[in-house]
Picture 1 (tube, rainbow, N blue to C red):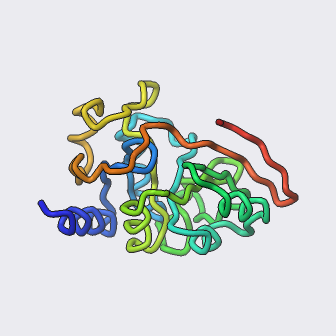
Picture 2 (cartoon, rainbow, N blue to C red; picture 1 turned 45 degrees about the horizontal axis):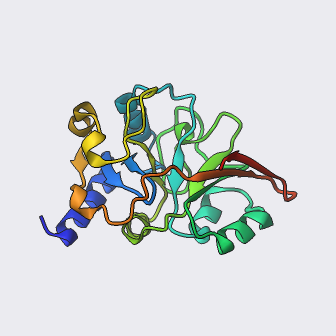
Length: 200
């Protein structure tokens, strides 16, 4: 399958509410449309993970982030502008649908955000991921491709076959050109400039 065909198939799968296994700028991830609660529920099911745990999402730029959080703290803008390594920011005030509601493109799925209304979003450094999110036109779930509680696989070969079999589309490892194999830094930001480093 050619690179353009792989990209198109991944995008089509996401648009149809499916799940994908794909390389990110950190590790291999499980992904779906983050505005689709049924697709998000499927990700939790594949990982065997409690849906009370929050997920990391990918956005193509701060403009997209601004559509799904009530206000972007100014400190977040500063961090994004100087960032040169994978960095997930936890924003307050996610714009999410009501619990149990079906999805729409203007709200994050209710099960994609934390119980306190925060949401972790990363702008990927990897062009392939960034373009995929841009073409989808809404955030993309990006959670590590492992069963909950088991080690995070750093390479495609380490991903459990159970995970590969469970998703709707597997992006071939040949596309993996920029994954670092390392988890992103996680920083929680507040509207008054507060910063809490969750993971360095």
